[in-house]
Image (cartoon, rainbow, N blue to C red; front, side, top):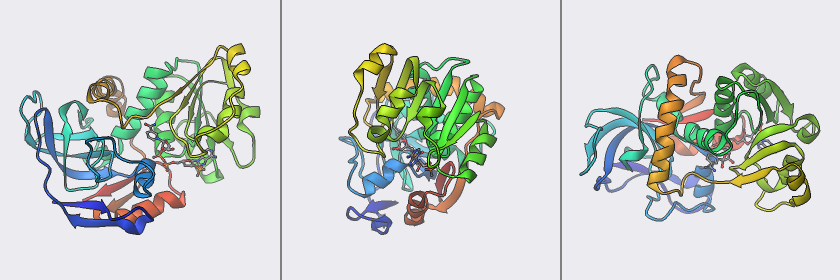
Length: 318
Ligand SMILES: NC(=O)c1ccc[n+]([C@@H]2O[C@H](COP(=O)([O-])OP(=O)(O)OC[C@H]3O[C@@H](n4cnc5c(N)ncnc54)[C@H](OP(=O)(O)O)[C@@H]3O)[C@@H](O)[C@H]2O)c1
């Protein structure tokens, strides 16, 4: 098969579409003929040599895909050759084929084209597991989402709205603000012009900045607030005022999805299919797709992501 190989750490130009050995499904795994994948910010870090795949995972980038099951390994029940699926991957999505544990495979929500389903696994599993399973966002609470126009942000806005939360997002431009409001955000803060900590008190904060925002995120928490850090675009270190956290009886949780054991990912995937797929099938939540790039031109897709003009997901389609 062909796959994108990272020839050496570097810029988008190190992504090369090459012939590599076909993956073979082992016990408990399925082989998917990939129809589409999608770009995540983590793929850029991996390309730059700053984010290694977890032990045992392929070096081929790509954390999600949609496609058709081509083979099933021993001990896989309920999935058959020919099924149209999408999947949460530990890697390997930028390719013609991928093997994945059956627990990380999901049906394509009814009404969603197979290609577009590739935009769903990473953002739905991340937002659902962090905001709803970990932070237990409740109806009527306020959610602050940093980077509202990101792949993650566009899903967080829609899910929070569907579950009756008040959503405030930060963005870096007026155009992105418009898009977030259209997706259902209740308030938008342009972080280049205003300090979010002076504008909002939130019960849950979904943060992708990390160190640089830590003090102000704590300031922006309500009593009993939960700060969930999933990205470190503003660095890994920040100063924490423990006194403020204590007074607010607040908590901070930082977590990644990619390195978790298969059983844990499987539990998240099942919960997403149970709780999020009905919303996708009703049209209340939709994949937000900015562009569709041929998979062998992943370098172009990375340039697009890094230039920062996108809203939502960039698909890699075959
Ligand atoms: N922990 C996990 O398991 C997990 C899973 C998926 C994603 N993530 C993380 O979530 C983040 C988003 O991922 P993605 O793939 O959706 O990326 P993406 O679409 O490239 O989005 C990155 C976003 O960061 C925003 N941003 C940059 N500087 C900002 C600032 N100072 N304040 C607020 N927003 C800022 C940009 O918005 P503007 O142009 O408006 O500035 C952009 O929308 C990444 O950090 C990624 O690593 C973590």
